[in-house]
Image (tube, rainbow, N blue to C red):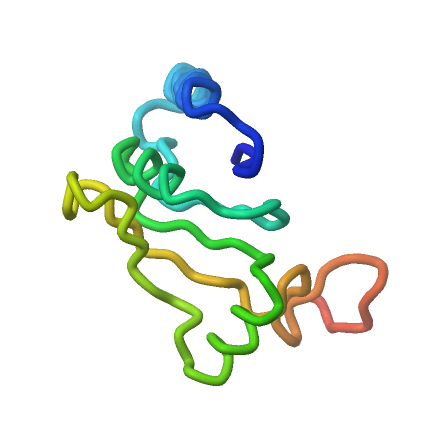
Length: 122
């Protein structure tokens, strides 16, 4: 996924087009991603939601949001939402979106690196 904070929309489209073409050539149409994952974005733009929806994504999850937004969404249980990317495109620009509840950390009992003591997931 691209950076959202400083990227021009032409670059976003080019990057995703090249990536989609590579995946299709290497693995076939079944490899086309339907969900995006932005673990460490620096801001979010409405246009990104619209572009991702128009590129065929069904959802997007990101790890970092403003701390006040995170606290509010945690208290109101609204960590998942439908992001309406464009008032003009209606549902064509809507994207199911969620905030990862532990930001950079995996869920309990699902850690698989050297910094954890979790049992292996089998």
